[in-house]
Length: 264
Image (cartoon, rainbow, N blue to C red; front, side, top):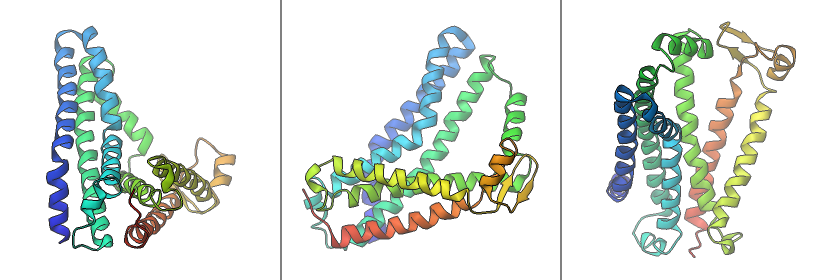
């Protein structure tokens, strides 16, 4: 049943998502082509393409969150919840599909960024050597850490869709349902503020890792930041705390749809 629901989600959303991906690639390709012909003219489409590449994954997530609200809690929600499927199964299928789409969107954004990098090289804004030099200065040269950070950043991006879906589900409950579409927005602002507080708490939990010096520190990250702001590492707790909170949000989203559903 989950597979059938996910297939339905794909068939229903593939049009807008595919169109957005093709338009983004077209703008990036036009910018690259113009860079070979007229660098001055290429500057504007290059800026547009670079901006789209940076926000592409987030834009896709917002689209999916809005679609989740419309299909599950708006007028179409009545039809959706007439299906002989438990609420937990329904939201689980939608959430897993959104996570997979997020991964695909991130990979597509990487393609767009590579095209933008090639355009920037043609425009004389940077060289490949300078880019990789800056990359190593930012993330260090340890291969394991580059993979570790990349996978965790991807996981954090995936957890963002969890926050959106939680905000939509809980923000549509009876306690705030009268505000209409503002319910999910207000709930998300609360969730966002809570995650910022948690990020601060992470600076009180060791260890931290400094990619440039490839060293671990078991003192409080906050103390390291005060003593040596330039040499402080990345608090490792920021990752696992986010994942634990995301798991709680998934559980609460399922409970919300399964037990506290109230359509408008």
